[in-house]
Length: 333
Image (tube, rainbow, N blue to C red; front, side, top):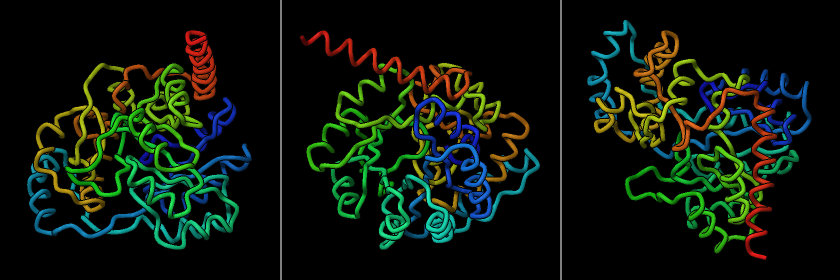
């Protein structure tokens, strides 16, 4: 939900619906995250923050340069200059320090394990630490790192893949398969994540062993979300989704558009350099409402998203999940 859709208002509405609201800390400057924390804390007591664990190594500058040259005409046609393809860790240390001094209930991480010592520092501040995994091997590593719970992400999920290593040999398990396999190797609370759009889908991950479901795409059209109009409109269609590195240099699931079709096969594994390179062009696309210049992140069942308030969406998911689980239980009596 980073990059626009996540807002304090969305986290507050989810809380009021009975869920655990989260703020997306990715891409935000620490000062902006601090503002969002204050805004949210003024309305609810318990919520979480998600951070990016940070990239492992720099990409080849020549490969990035070749991609920039390929995108040049697209940027020129839009009257936009491409950004600086810089390597950074998304100000992770500063954000962790902020959350140590202004702790929240849960700090979750994606893109791998946080640096050594971070989990202990957040535990000392009183926060639980949830780590995103996509396979049994990653789950074992996360458990050894001191995770309090694991967010088990399936390949059907919208947005960036949580894989520790973003290569073509990485795991491509669905959320149900991943939950089954992860349960077999670790004894930690699990949170299922992967295009959970209905109460029946939420019920399915609960029956499969998850303690909760992590919902993202279902909130993208919520009135409190900061999702752009172009993305809202695309999500309401039945357009197919694909995994692509075209926008950020890291595999992510989104709705197919011209950018992916034209440049997807040429995009290098280069996160966050490609993210920074393409950021001005994507910002322009959102400003002018051009869906072909936007990363339209969405899960596979995105067309089921509704344009309701997040509190109502949350209550409906919970009610439908309870009914679905009860119905399944009755069938086996």
